[in-house]
Length: 358
Image 1 (tube, helix red, strand yellow):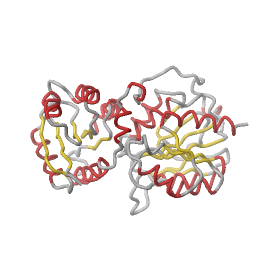
Image 2 (cartoon, helix red, strand yellow):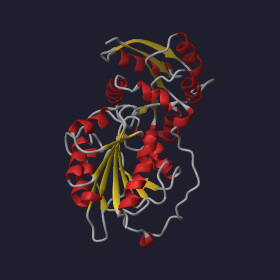
Image 3 (tube, rainbow, N blue to C red):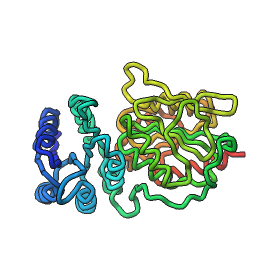
């Protein structure tokens, strides 16, 4: 396997040197080029396209957003945003423009540099598994996964006492590429959907609330970061807080949520398997499990349990998922499932919940 060529784009010379030194220590990374801003980076890309890019967003002359826009039109190359926690809105804007993932830049009062080193190692492993088809589709006019608001077809937000318990609950798991995939899925949901949605997206703490707020602006579902023991309501969606896990539990007025700390040694946080298993046990055939893009096998065993208890299982088509590991892991279990391109999943969820509703 040939070494990967990297391009580090950051206006801070210290950051450039630091990230380049970390990349140089990763097996499988070869040549590393450096650029101080987007204009210089574009020249380097035109001369010799790298295999992947790490990108700061706030830079002089040509900033990260302008660079992403131009890059994805000309050369759809995997881009990892390296950003501080103060830029949460900017991170999701960068994901809309085509970045595949982001790494949280450590602060003096936050994680040490070792955290960034571990993230880089993990993301380089992900890059080796990216689907070239997904990257090309991601930048075409018909497959732009964005967070632009659209008019709501559903009623205005109801008082809590008027919220209706859902006939079905859709549990969704995603990792790398998930924020954009979820945006596309949510844009294709319909107001006829008789279901609540619970999302476990692998994402660092401090980012999930902003992500939920952006999802809330793009479709018919009302989206928020999940709260402890909140009851599920029809037409609402709940994003697991970063750094936590989430489960569905019974209550006297229908299914509710429990936010819990991850078990010691849990590799994936939040755990998709933990969410799916709880949905299977509490909801039985009223659970619909959806596994989107991501590396690894999180969600496969939980999807198996949903299927065993009569629920439906959907996966994002591995051929178009940015990273096909998680959907393929479900396929390998041999359970009955449907494989659909990301833009078709929202329509299918609506069909399933409308058919099953009373």
